[in-house]
Length: 376
Image (tube, rainbow, N blue to C red):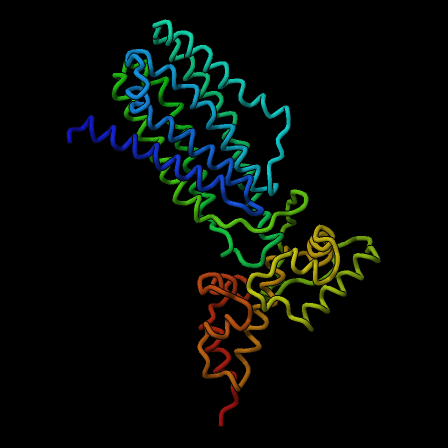
């Protein structure tokens, strides 16, 4: 198998992989259904771009100008990337008529490319102009996409107590893919001006989008999306006291009686019922237990207690762990066993949270507890 055949095999394989991933993502149900559907469309757009050589042969298009016919697919990438990021933050992406405006560049580029390709034009300046327009579009969408992903990552701590429910590395990988595709779009006009051979450019673009399909597919299928807020929320700055426990002092300058009542009920529930022992406890779970709207509960946690949900719950878990550590009956238990009994469900998260809240590792806490025991 020579290099050309290998390349065609890779492009065709990427197309079949993309179609499989689209069918899989489109048929998944759940609260993250819309975000998976958008991700599927994004993967399909990348797969079609990657499979450009295969499609050229299959459709019998003239190879000289066929590259222009498929360039409009590139204009779908930036809107779909931003739509996926927005669907993560909002828990869905209700379609509006105005959203069609985001696809006008693709429609315009498609019309231009189709007319000139079908009439055998194939002017390099047309191609250069389309790629220049794509570069501007990619830049215009890159900044809001990064801002949305950052807001989504920050919002997690306002509604979940266990970040292991979400593959945070996926957010970084997704942004890396977005940024890489933007860099490719910015580089193409420069390469065209330097008269890079079209075959080299076409193969390079196909390989770049093929890599995007594989990364988005592999990482996207592993993504776990927690319950989303009713309204997009930006969590308040987390406050942790000097000794590592949540600072539970009121933060409101003018206390609201209803807020104070809910705060009292919240603290009583945490102390007596210990819902934080459930590893997957979320803001919605705690709100149902208190029989209040979760947005109202979130506001009380942020404003009255000065912490976010994640640090509040894990602060109590650290407190529980230290209590178990000091229990004479549990002195022979392993640290990780005590951690799970306190509500944690993974060693890396447990170590990180304990260090943040106490400034010490779990092993150091155990050593201190052993040293504090009265000598026999």
